[in-house]
Length: 148
Image (tube, rainbow, N blue to C red; front, side):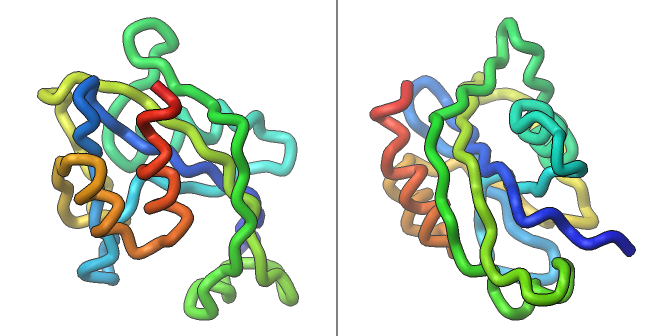
């Protein structure tokens, strides 16, 4: 199996009134997060990664017209949790994460990938930030009002 590329996207999905969609990781009950995912290739454009991961994990299509992904131009570097390091090349301990957001209608259909996630919930953004297991994910949600 190929190693994961230690460069990824985080996509905060929200409504106009700042309700945020969180999804629960399969195999890690209680681990709530926004959409995340690694590049498929080193030269894959970040917008392509974000569009693909958004669709794979929620079924939401960023069509570039009605549903627009916004690149915040922000990056986080964080230490990869030891439990997930086996997915990366030996010696890789940190990941570079790029932050995106996307505004959707509250009634947008959400279709989870059962292999990756088991549940979803809409929460006001402050509550959503509190529920995230990842500090960088929580911080991005707290910054959401500045990126509308």
